[in-house]
Amino acid sequence: MLIALLLVLAALRPSSSIPVDGHFNTFLELAGQPSTSPTRTPQNIIWSCLATIFACVWVAVHPNIPNPRESQWRQFWRRVSTMLYAVIAPELVTLWAIRQRSAAGRIKRDFNDRYFPNGGTGRWTLSHGFFIQMGGLLFAQEGRDAYVITYKELLELIDNGNIDFPSITEEDILDKSKGDFLTKILVVIQTTWFIVQCLVRWAFGLAVTEIEVVTLAFAILNIVTYIMWFPKPLNVQVGIKIPKSRDAPLLPVPKPEVRKGWLQRQIERGNKGGRVTWVPWMVLVSLLLPSKLFSGLFLPLGAMATDDQVLAGSAYVPTFYADLDITTEIGVICPSLGMSVVFGALHFIPWNLEFPSDTEELLWRICSVVITVEPLPAAIGLGLSRLTKGYAVGDVITRVMESMATSIGSLAFIGLPLYVLARLTLLILAFTTLRSLRGTALTDVAWSSFVPHI
Image (tube, rainbow, N blue to C red; front, top):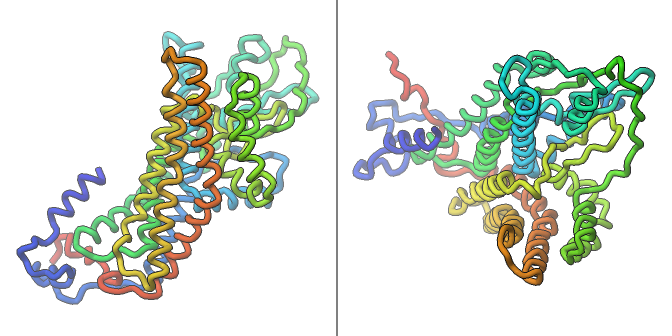
Protein backbone atom coordinates (compact mmCIF):
# COMPACT_ATOMS: atom_id res chain seq x y z
CA MET A 1 0.00 0.00 0.00
CA LEU A 2 2.84 2.41 0.89
CA ILE A 3 4.61 1.61 -2.38
CA ALA A 4 1.43 2.36 -4.33
CA LEU A 5 1.06 5.65 -2.45
CA LEU A 6 4.64 6.60 -3.27
CA LEU A 7 4.03 5.93 -6.97
CA VAL A 8 0.94 8.14 -6.93
CA LEU A 9 2.81 10.94 -5.20
CA ALA A 10 5.70 10.58 -7.61
CA ALA A 11 3.24 11.00 -10.47
CA LEU A 12 2.08 14.28 -8.89
CA ARG A 13 5.65 15.55 -8.70
CA PRO A 14 6.36 18.40 -11.10
CA SER A 15 7.70 17.38 -14.49
CA SER A 16 11.32 18.06 -15.26
CA SER A 17 10.18 20.21 -18.23
CA ILE A 18 8.62 22.73 -15.81
CA PRO A 19 11.21 25.09 -14.30
CA VAL A 20 10.19 24.53 -10.69
CA ASP A 21 13.79 24.59 -9.50
CA GLY A 22 12.95 21.90 -6.90
CA HIS A 23 11.00 24.29 -4.68
CA PHE A 24 7.46 23.80 -3.47
CA ASN A 25 6.74 27.54 -3.74
CA THR A 26 7.25 27.53 -7.52
CA PHE A 27 5.07 24.44 -7.84
CA LEU A 28 2.26 26.19 -5.96
CA GLU A 29 2.55 29.23 -8.22
CA LEU A 30 2.20 27.06 -11.31
CA ALA A 31 -0.79 25.34 -9.67
CA GLY A 32 -2.49 28.68 -9.06
CA GLN A 33 -1.83 28.70 -5.33
CA PRO A 34 -0.26 31.54 -3.31
CA SER A 35 3.53 31.60 -3.59
CA THR A 36 4.00 31.85 0.18
CA SER A 37 4.15 28.26 1.41
CA PRO A 38 3.64 27.35 5.05
CA THR A 39 6.72 26.94 7.21
CA ARG A 40 7.58 24.86 10.23
CA THR A 41 9.99 25.33 13.10
CA PRO A 42 12.58 22.93 14.53
CA GLN A 43 10.31 22.62 17.57
CA ASN A 44 7.45 21.43 15.33
CA ILE A 45 9.74 18.80 13.81
CA ILE A 46 10.99 17.61 17.19
CA TRP A 47 7.55 17.25 18.75
CA SER A 48 6.17 15.43 15.71
CA CYS A 49 9.07 12.98 15.76
CA LEU A 50 8.98 12.48 19.54
CA ALA A 51 5.24 11.78 19.44
CA THR A 52 5.75 9.12 16.78
CA ILE A 53 8.73 7.55 18.57
CA PHE A 54 6.74 7.49 21.83
CA ALA A 55 3.93 5.68 20.05
CA CYS A 56 6.48 3.18 18.73
CA VAL A 57 8.39 2.45 21.93
CA TRP A 58 5.80 2.93 24.68
CA VAL A 59 2.27 2.52 23.40
CA ALA A 60 3.04 -0.13 20.78
CA VAL A 61 5.11 -2.43 23.03
CA HIS A 62 2.94 -5.20 24.54
CA PRO A 63 4.76 -6.35 27.70
CA ASN A 64 4.35 -9.67 29.44
CA ILE A 65 2.47 -9.81 32.76
CA PRO A 66 4.73 -8.34 35.48
CA ASN A 67 5.84 -10.03 38.67
CA PRO A 68 2.87 -9.77 41.09
CA ARG A 69 5.29 -9.34 44.00
CA GLU A 70 6.91 -6.25 42.47
CA SER A 71 5.95 -2.77 43.60
CA GLN A 72 4.22 -0.35 41.26
CA TRP A 73 7.44 1.66 41.04
CA ARG A 74 9.45 -1.42 40.09
CA GLN A 75 6.93 -2.34 37.40
CA PHE A 76 7.02 1.20 36.04
CA TRP A 77 10.82 1.18 35.95
CA ARG A 78 10.77 -2.16 34.11
CA ARG A 79 8.46 -0.60 31.53
CA VAL A 80 10.76 2.42 31.17
CA SER A 81 13.82 0.19 30.73
CA THR A 82 11.97 -1.77 28.05
CA MET A 83 11.24 1.53 26.30
CA LEU A 84 14.94 2.44 26.41
CA TYR A 85 15.87 -0.92 24.91
CA ALA A 86 13.29 -0.30 22.19
CA VAL A 87 14.92 3.06 21.40
CA ILE A 88 18.38 1.49 21.19
CA ALA A 89 17.42 -1.63 19.23
CA PRO A 90 13.85 -1.45 17.85
CA GLU A 91 14.53 -4.33 15.47
CA LEU A 92 15.05 -6.64 18.46
CA VAL A 93 11.62 -5.64 19.76
CA THR A 94 10.24 -6.60 16.35
CA LEU A 95 12.07 -9.93 16.59
CA TRP A 96 10.56 -10.49 20.05
CA ALA A 97 7.10 -9.78 18.62
CA ILE A 98 7.68 -12.14 15.68
CA ARG A 99 8.85 -14.90 18.03
CA GLN A 100 5.72 -14.56 20.16
CA ARG A 101 3.46 -14.37 17.09
CA SER A 102 5.00 -17.51 15.58
CA ALA A 103 4.67 -19.37 18.88
CA ALA A 104 1.09 -18.16 19.35
CA GLY A 105 0.13 -19.54 15.94
CA ARG A 106 1.78 -22.88 16.72
CA ILE A 107 0.06 -23.09 20.13
CA LYS A 108 -3.31 -22.27 18.60
CA ARG A 109 -2.99 -24.90 15.88
CA ASP A 110 -1.66 -27.60 18.20
CA PHE A 111 -4.32 -27.05 20.87
CA ASN A 112 -7.19 -27.08 18.38
CA ASP A 113 -5.85 -30.13 16.52
CA ARG A 114 -5.41 -31.96 19.82
CA TYR A 115 -8.74 -31.18 21.52
CA PHE A 116 -11.01 -29.83 18.76
CA PRO A 117 -10.15 -31.81 15.61
CA ASN A 118 -13.74 -31.50 14.36
CA GLY A 119 -14.27 -27.86 15.29
CA GLY A 120 -16.80 -26.60 17.81
CA THR A 121 -16.91 -23.97 20.52
CA GLY A 122 -13.97 -23.53 22.86
CA ARG A 123 -11.29 -23.48 20.18
CA TRP A 124 -8.26 -21.37 20.96
CA THR A 125 -7.34 -18.18 19.12
CA LEU A 126 -4.11 -16.24 18.71
CA SER A 127 -5.04 -14.29 21.84
CA HIS A 128 -4.90 -17.56 23.80
CA GLY A 129 -1.47 -18.31 22.35
CA PHE A 130 -0.21 -14.89 23.35
CA PHE A 131 -1.87 -14.98 26.76
CA ILE A 132 -0.19 -18.17 27.93
CA GLN A 133 3.20 -16.84 26.76
CA MET A 134 2.61 -13.69 28.80
CA GLY A 135 2.31 -15.75 31.95
CA GLY A 136 -1.47 -15.48 31.89
CA LEU A 137 -2.27 -18.99 33.17
CA LEU A 138 -1.34 -19.97 36.73
CA PHE A 139 -1.81 -23.33 38.44
CA ALA A 140 -3.40 -22.93 41.88
CA GLN A 141 -3.69 -25.45 44.73
CA GLU A 142 -5.15 -25.12 48.20
CA GLY A 143 -2.70 -23.62 50.66
CA ARG A 144 0.07 -23.22 48.11
CA ASP A 145 1.26 -20.32 46.01
CA ALA A 146 0.08 -20.30 42.41
CA TYR A 147 2.80 -20.51 39.77
CA VAL A 148 2.81 -19.78 36.07
CA ILE A 149 2.58 -22.68 33.65
CA THR A 150 3.86 -22.96 30.11
CA TYR A 151 1.91 -24.47 27.24
CA LYS A 152 3.75 -27.78 27.60
CA GLU A 153 2.92 -27.90 31.33
CA LEU A 154 -0.72 -27.06 30.60
CA LEU A 155 -1.02 -30.06 28.27
CA GLU A 156 0.49 -32.33 30.93
CA LEU A 157 -1.96 -31.09 33.58
CA ILE A 158 -4.91 -31.65 31.25
CA ASP A 159 -3.84 -35.09 30.05
CA ASN A 160 -3.05 -36.29 33.59
CA GLY A 161 -6.40 -35.11 34.92
CA ASN A 162 -4.83 -32.66 37.37
CA ILE A 163 -7.09 -29.84 36.17
CA ASP A 164 -10.49 -29.66 34.53
CA PHE A 165 -10.44 -28.75 30.88
CA PRO A 166 -9.98 -24.94 30.79
CA SER A 167 -12.90 -23.08 29.28
CA ILE A 168 -11.29 -19.69 28.84
CA THR A 169 -12.86 -17.64 26.05
CA GLU A 170 -11.21 -14.93 24.01
CA GLU A 171 -13.58 -12.44 25.62
CA ASP A 172 -12.24 -13.40 29.07
CA ILE A 173 -8.72 -12.65 27.88
CA LEU A 174 -9.48 -9.41 26.04
CA ASP A 175 -11.44 -8.19 29.06
CA LYS A 176 -8.13 -8.00 30.92
CA SER A 177 -6.51 -5.96 28.16
CA LYS A 178 -5.98 -2.25 28.77
CA GLY A 179 -6.00 -1.48 25.06
CA ASP A 180 -9.04 -1.86 22.82
CA PHE A 181 -9.28 -2.08 19.04
CA LEU A 182 -9.67 1.71 18.67
CA THR A 183 -6.55 2.41 20.74
CA LYS A 184 -4.46 0.11 18.60
CA ILE A 185 -5.84 1.58 15.37
CA LEU A 186 -4.95 5.10 16.57
CA VAL A 187 -1.33 4.06 17.07
CA VAL A 188 -1.22 2.60 13.55
CA ILE A 189 -2.75 5.83 12.17
CA GLN A 190 -0.14 7.96 13.99
CA THR A 191 2.81 6.03 12.59
CA THR A 192 1.28 5.69 9.12
CA TRP A 193 0.53 9.41 9.00
CA PHE A 194 4.17 10.21 9.74
CA ILE A 195 5.29 7.91 6.92
CA VAL A 196 2.84 9.60 4.53
CA GLN A 197 4.23 13.04 5.45
CA CYS A 198 7.76 11.92 4.62
CA LEU A 199 6.63 10.42 1.31
CA VAL A 200 4.82 13.62 0.36
CA ARG A 201 7.89 15.71 1.13
CA TRP A 202 10.01 13.51 -1.11
CA ALA A 203 7.38 13.60 -3.84
CA PHE A 204 7.56 17.42 -3.97
CA GLY A 205 11.30 17.77 -3.52
CA LEU A 206 11.22 19.02 0.09
CA ALA A 207 14.14 18.16 2.34
CA VAL A 208 13.69 15.63 5.14
CA THR A 209 15.76 16.13 8.29
CA GLU A 210 17.93 13.49 9.93
CA ILE A 211 15.63 13.18 12.92
CA GLU A 212 12.73 12.50 10.56
CA VAL A 213 14.75 9.75 8.87
CA VAL A 214 15.41 8.14 12.27
CA THR A 215 11.73 8.41 13.15
CA LEU A 216 10.72 7.05 9.74
CA ALA A 217 12.80 3.92 10.38
CA PHE A 218 11.08 3.55 13.76
CA ALA A 219 7.63 4.00 12.21
CA ILE A 220 8.12 1.45 9.42
CA LEU A 221 9.46 -1.13 11.86
CA ASN A 222 6.67 -0.32 14.31
CA ILE A 223 3.99 -1.23 11.78
CA VAL A 224 5.48 -4.73 11.49
CA THR A 225 5.74 -5.01 15.29
CA TYR A 226 2.17 -3.86 15.81
CA ILE A 227 0.79 -6.25 13.22
CA MET A 228 2.57 -9.12 15.00
CA TRP A 229 1.21 -8.07 18.41
CA PHE A 230 -2.26 -6.93 17.33
CA PRO A 231 -4.08 -9.97 18.85
CA LYS A 232 -1.98 -9.79 22.05
CA PRO A 233 -3.66 -8.32 25.15
CA LEU A 234 -2.11 -5.04 26.24
CA ASN A 235 -0.86 -4.22 29.76
CA VAL A 236 -2.48 -7.16 31.55
CA GLN A 237 -1.57 -7.01 35.23
CA VAL A 238 -3.00 -10.28 36.63
CA GLY A 239 -3.32 -13.72 35.07
CA ILE A 240 -6.09 -16.30 35.34
CA LYS A 241 -5.77 -18.99 38.00
CA ILE A 242 -6.62 -22.55 37.00
CA PRO A 243 -7.52 -24.57 40.13
CA LYS A 244 -6.54 -28.15 40.68
CA SER A 245 -9.22 -30.69 39.87
CA ARG A 246 -11.25 -31.73 42.93
CA ASP A 247 -10.33 -35.41 42.65
CA ALA A 248 -6.67 -34.88 41.77
CA PRO A 249 -3.97 -35.22 44.46
CA LEU A 250 -1.87 -32.28 45.55
CA LEU A 251 1.11 -31.79 43.31
CA PRO A 252 4.50 -30.77 44.67
CA VAL A 253 5.51 -27.23 43.86
CA PRO A 254 8.54 -27.37 41.53
CA LYS A 255 11.78 -26.50 43.23
CA PRO A 256 13.35 -23.20 42.16
CA GLU A 257 15.87 -23.61 39.38
CA VAL A 258 19.07 -21.76 38.68
CA ARG A 259 18.45 -19.55 35.68
CA LYS A 260 20.80 -20.23 32.79
CA GLY A 261 21.24 -17.80 29.97
CA TRP A 262 20.74 -18.79 26.36
CA LEU A 263 24.47 -18.60 25.71
CA GLN A 264 25.27 -20.95 28.61
CA ARG A 265 22.64 -23.44 27.45
CA GLN A 266 24.09 -23.42 23.95
CA ILE A 267 27.54 -24.20 25.33
CA GLU A 268 26.19 -27.07 27.45
CA ARG A 269 24.27 -28.41 24.46
CA GLY A 270 27.47 -28.39 22.39
CA ASN A 271 29.35 -30.25 25.14
CA LYS A 272 26.71 -32.96 25.36
CA GLY A 273 26.83 -33.46 21.62
CA GLY A 274 30.59 -33.88 21.62
CA ARG A 275 31.06 -30.94 19.24
CA VAL A 276 33.81 -28.34 19.22
CA THR A 277 31.43 -25.45 18.49
CA TRP A 278 31.52 -24.34 22.13
CA VAL A 279 35.09 -22.99 21.79
CA PRO A 280 34.16 -19.67 20.09
CA TRP A 281 31.40 -19.16 22.64
CA MET A 282 33.88 -19.60 25.48
CA VAL A 283 36.12 -16.99 23.86
CA LEU A 284 33.12 -14.67 23.62
CA VAL A 285 32.24 -15.22 27.27
CA SER A 286 35.80 -14.56 28.44
CA LEU A 287 35.90 -11.31 26.45
CA LEU A 288 32.55 -9.82 27.32
CA LEU A 289 30.88 -11.34 30.36
CA PRO A 290 33.26 -9.91 33.01
CA SER A 291 31.96 -6.45 32.15
CA LYS A 292 29.09 -5.29 34.38
CA LEU A 293 28.00 -2.94 31.61
CA PHE A 294 27.63 -5.89 29.26
CA SER A 295 25.61 -7.83 31.82
CA GLY A 296 23.39 -4.88 32.64
CA LEU A 297 22.72 -3.53 29.16
CA PHE A 298 23.62 -5.93 26.38
CA LEU A 299 22.29 -9.18 27.86
CA PRO A 300 18.70 -7.82 28.01
CA LEU A 301 19.02 -6.94 24.33
CA GLY A 302 20.08 -10.50 23.58
CA ALA A 303 17.17 -11.76 25.69
CA MET A 304 14.72 -10.17 23.25
CA ALA A 305 15.99 -12.56 20.61
CA THR A 306 16.68 -15.67 22.67
CA ASP A 307 14.76 -15.84 25.98
CA ASP A 308 12.67 -19.03 25.87
CA GLN A 309 13.04 -20.35 29.43
CA VAL A 310 10.59 -20.11 32.34
CA LEU A 311 11.89 -21.15 35.73
CA ALA A 312 9.89 -23.94 37.38
CA GLY A 313 7.60 -22.66 40.13
CA SER A 314 7.94 -19.03 39.09
CA ALA A 315 5.05 -16.62 39.57
CA TYR A 316 5.75 -14.84 36.27
CA VAL A 317 7.54 -15.27 32.97
CA PRO A 318 10.72 -13.31 32.04
CA THR A 319 10.32 -9.85 30.54
CA PHE A 320 11.21 -10.93 26.99
CA TYR A 321 9.97 -14.51 27.08
CA ALA A 322 8.57 -16.25 24.00
CA ASP A 323 7.78 -19.95 23.70
CA LEU A 324 10.12 -20.42 20.76
CA ASP A 325 13.70 -21.65 20.37
CA ILE A 326 15.08 -19.30 17.76
CA THR A 327 17.86 -21.71 16.76
CA THR A 328 15.25 -24.10 15.32
CA GLU A 329 13.09 -21.51 13.54
CA ILE A 330 14.81 -20.34 10.38
CA GLY A 331 11.47 -18.98 9.18
CA VAL A 332 11.57 -16.51 12.07
CA ILE A 333 15.22 -15.49 12.21
CA CYS A 334 15.74 -14.88 8.47
CA PRO A 335 12.89 -12.35 8.01
CA SER A 336 13.95 -10.65 11.24
CA LEU A 337 17.54 -10.30 10.08
CA GLY A 338 16.29 -8.97 6.75
CA MET A 339 14.21 -6.31 8.50
CA SER A 340 17.22 -5.37 10.63
CA VAL A 341 19.26 -4.73 7.50
CA VAL A 342 16.43 -2.68 5.95
CA PHE A 343 16.09 -0.68 9.18
CA GLY A 344 19.78 0.17 9.07
CA ALA A 345 19.73 0.91 5.34
CA LEU A 346 17.00 3.54 5.84
CA HIS A 347 19.63 5.62 7.62
CA PHE A 348 21.48 5.91 4.29
CA ILE A 349 18.80 8.35 3.09
CA PRO A 350 20.68 11.46 4.35
CA TRP A 351 23.97 10.14 2.91
CA ASN A 352 24.29 13.03 0.43
CA LEU A 353 22.53 15.68 2.50
CA GLU A 354 24.43 18.75 3.66
CA PHE A 355 25.42 18.30 7.31
CA PRO A 356 26.42 21.19 9.59
CA SER A 357 29.98 19.84 9.74
CA ASP A 358 32.17 17.28 8.02
CA THR A 359 32.64 15.41 11.31
CA GLU A 360 28.90 14.90 11.73
CA GLU A 361 28.60 13.75 8.13
CA LEU A 362 31.40 11.20 8.59
CA LEU A 363 29.96 9.94 11.89
CA TRP A 364 26.51 9.52 10.35
CA ARG A 365 27.86 7.51 7.43
CA ILE A 366 30.02 5.25 9.63
CA CYS A 367 27.23 4.58 12.12
CA SER A 368 24.73 3.89 9.34
CA VAL A 369 27.04 1.26 7.90
CA VAL A 370 27.62 -0.31 11.33
CA ILE A 371 23.94 -0.80 12.20
CA THR A 372 23.24 -2.13 8.69
CA VAL A 373 25.98 -4.75 8.52
CA GLU A 374 25.93 -5.83 12.19
CA PRO A 375 23.13 -8.41 11.67
CA LEU A 376 24.88 -9.95 8.65
CA PRO A 377 27.28 -12.24 10.60
CA ALA A 378 24.29 -13.85 12.29
CA ALA A 379 22.65 -14.43 8.90
CA ILE A 380 25.86 -15.89 7.42
CA GLY A 381 26.38 -18.12 10.47
CA LEU A 382 22.80 -19.36 10.25
CA GLY A 383 23.20 -20.09 6.55
CA LEU A 384 26.39 -22.08 7.12
CA SER A 385 24.79 -24.08 9.92
CA ARG A 386 21.99 -25.09 7.56
CA LEU A 387 24.20 -26.15 4.66
CA THR A 388 24.85 -29.61 6.07
CA LYS A 389 21.27 -30.24 7.20
CA GLY A 390 19.69 -33.00 5.17
CA TYR A 391 22.86 -33.83 3.26
CA ALA A 392 25.03 -36.91 3.68
CA VAL A 393 28.39 -35.25 4.28
CA GLY A 394 31.32 -36.46 6.30
CA ASP A 395 31.51 -35.90 10.04
CA VAL A 396 34.68 -33.83 9.66
CA ILE A 397 33.02 -31.46 7.16
CA THR A 398 29.98 -31.18 9.42
CA ARG A 399 32.10 -30.22 12.41
CA VAL A 400 34.11 -27.72 10.39
CA MET A 401 30.94 -26.09 9.03
CA GLU A 402 29.37 -25.93 12.48
CA SER A 403 32.51 -24.36 13.93
CA MET A 404 32.62 -21.79 11.14
CA ALA A 405 28.93 -21.03 11.58
CA THR A 406 29.28 -20.53 15.33
CA SER A 407 32.46 -18.44 14.98
CA ILE A 408 30.97 -16.12 12.37
CA GLY A 409 27.62 -15.95 14.15
CA SER A 410 29.30 -14.98 17.40
CA LEU A 411 30.58 -11.82 15.68
CA ALA A 412 27.03 -10.48 15.89
CA PHE A 413 27.24 -10.76 19.69
CA ILE A 414 30.76 -9.37 19.86
CA GLY A 415 29.68 -6.43 17.70
CA LEU A 416 26.69 -5.63 19.90
CA PRO A 417 28.51 -2.95 21.98
CA LEU A 418 29.65 -1.25 18.75
CA TYR A 419 26.09 -1.44 17.44
CA VAL A 420 24.68 0.21 20.57
CA LEU A 421 27.30 2.96 20.37
CA ALA A 422 26.41 3.59 16.71
CA ARG A 423 22.68 3.73 17.50
CA LEU A 424 23.21 6.24 20.31
CA THR A 425 25.46 8.34 18.06
CA LEU A 426 22.80 8.47 15.35
CA LEU A 427 20.18 9.55 17.88
CA ILE A 428 22.44 12.35 19.13
CA LEU A 429 23.30 13.49 15.59
CA ALA A 430 19.61 13.55 14.71
CA PHE A 431 19.16 16.35 17.25
CA THR A 432 22.46 18.22 16.79
CA THR A 433 21.92 18.61 13.05
CA LEU A 434 18.72 20.57 13.73
CA ARG A 435 20.81 23.63 14.63
CA SER A 436 21.51 24.33 10.97
CA LEU A 437 18.52 23.56 8.76
CA ARG A 438 18.83 24.81 5.20
CA GLY A 439 16.99 24.79 1.91
CA THR A 440 13.43 23.46 2.07
CA ALA A 441 13.86 21.65 5.40
CA LEU A 442 11.67 24.26 7.12
CA THR A 443 9.12 24.42 4.29
CA ASP A 444 5.91 22.67 5.25
CA VAL A 445 3.49 20.90 2.93
CA ALA A 446 0.42 22.94 2.04
CA TRP A 447 -2.08 20.19 2.69
CA SER A 448 -5.00 22.44 1.80
CA SER A 449 -3.85 22.37 -1.85
CA PHE A 450 -4.70 18.65 -1.93
CA VAL A 451 -8.28 19.18 -0.67
CA PRO A 452 -10.94 20.73 -2.93
CA HIS A 453 -12.24 23.89 -1.26
CA ILE A 454 -13.71 27.28 -2.07
